[in-house]
Image 1 (tube, rainbow over the protein chains, first blue to last red):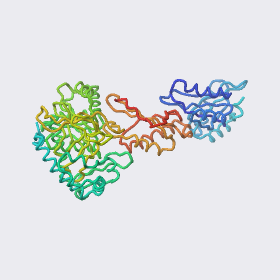
Image 2 (cartoon, rainbow over the protein chains, first blue to last red):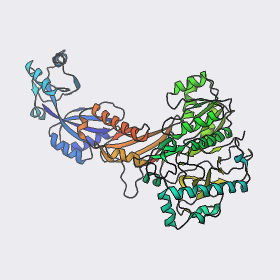
Image 3 (cartoon, chains in turn purple, brown):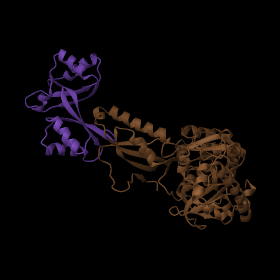
Amino acid sequence: MIQQLSIFVQNEVGSVAKVTAILKSNNINLRAIASFDTPEFAILRIVVDQPERAKAVLTEGGFAVTVSEAIAVELEDKPGVLHDLLQVIADAGFGVNYIYSIVIRSGKVPLIILNTDNLEGSKSVLKEKGYSVAEQEDVVL
Amino acid sequence: MIWAKEETLTRQEMSDLQFNRLKETLNRIYEKVPAYREKMNQAGVACEDIKDLDDLAKLPFTMKQDLRDNYPFGLFTAPKKDLVRIHASSGTTGKPTVVGYTKNDMDLWTECVSRIACMGGASSDDVAQISFGYGMFTGALGLHYGLENIGASVVPASSGNTQKQIMYMEDFEATLLVATPSYALHIGEIAKEMGKKLNIKIGLFGGEGMTEPMREEMYKLFGREMKVTQNYGMSELIGPGVSGECLELCGMHINEDHFIPEIINPDTGEVLAAGEKGELVVTCITKEALPLIRYRTGDITRLFYEPCKCGRTTVRMENLSGRSDDMLIIRGVNVFPSQIEEVLLKIPQIGAHYEILVDRKNHMDTMEISVELADESLLDSYAKLGELEKKIKFDLRTVLGLDAMIKLVGPRSLKRFEGKARRVTDLRK
């Protein structure tokens, strides 16, 4: 499992930039980011190298932040691999809440970040099927 | 037509009638309502000290708080078994303001509303659709009984489901509409969108003030020949039926054989001369169950005693120009910011600060309440945040009887105040 931060951002000009400004000034490295065009506010999800410290500085900066777990899975870069992975989860009867990804990992394959309605269950079925499920230290470098 | 002979008395006849009724009512209250008796004793005034109408100014005021302090029936002068109707209006502290009617009060109420309906041009030929919300609110049933009494055919449509309302109006050939001005405009607009030509010739509007631009909008939507009047009342006094505009549109005639109006300086309590602007204070002189002496309405207006071109001699009150406190009227419902605060403060997932934005869109009042998210664990999913919004809306609806839009904002993002908080922005003004 990896740690992700969920941050409440209002639909205003510069609101995401305020988050990144705080991360930058504290020298925290972003590994992944996901945000979608919702009408009034958004939950910005990020993966960083120092999640607890990022939470502390963002909270101090006036943001509502929570740290939670997500599954990160290594995927080869070829057609159909994401489908195969999602089929494993679907066959196990779990629902996917959202997906985003970490693309830049020096010399390593990308990671897909998943949230499902059963994190532990999803993780074990994926491991059973031979997927490489990453831990927090795998996203730091 | 003029419904009652009391609407055309000479000033002397009216004063004599008022004084006799005041004396009788005051004696009854002194005998039966300990809370008001105590007020009179503290003020050092006895029933015998009231020797003419000007002496009314010697009597202590009754405030909305007195009704709450004596919840539910403490200010009543009739035994509970004599009540035939009980209504309640929303209050700031969670306890509503309770009002009650004896059989005679119901007759008197019906009489007062009948006069107002006639003033606005209604007659037994009308099919009257009542689009006020029925329930504890006095507006709908008050107009309902008055209009039935003059022989109109009443359609108790209540509020909401606008397209069905329009279908009834069309199919029943409704000629008269009772609604808040904002809801009437909304109905008119939806009818226009649906391509329906309604036959509404009379509008009896109330529950909230109607500005002249709104009246002009009514003419545009319902036709220039429409008779557009507004009327005034409040549950504590009787409900609708205290006063109403005649077709001369020069203020609202007060049924002063039942309600004595005064205008006071809201800060000092001093009675102001006719024509001066101040807070309206009303004394009920005929009611059996709940006659209030010098009730502070909080409404700012002026009084005109000159006889009207319509033939009535009753005093007229100017259309309202504001309130002496912070009450909001939203879609005809009284809303106190403190009621909203009370609801919000009971929800731990949000912070203690809030902002209320009131506006008018498509002629309907809207209320948006911004609250700060305080529980980070809800950020797991949009669904959890959605649940929180739903809960806030539901709790507000339970207390206010009104839907509000909720805007969730980040912690510490709302304005903070060092002195008196100004949390309400009313863009309708």
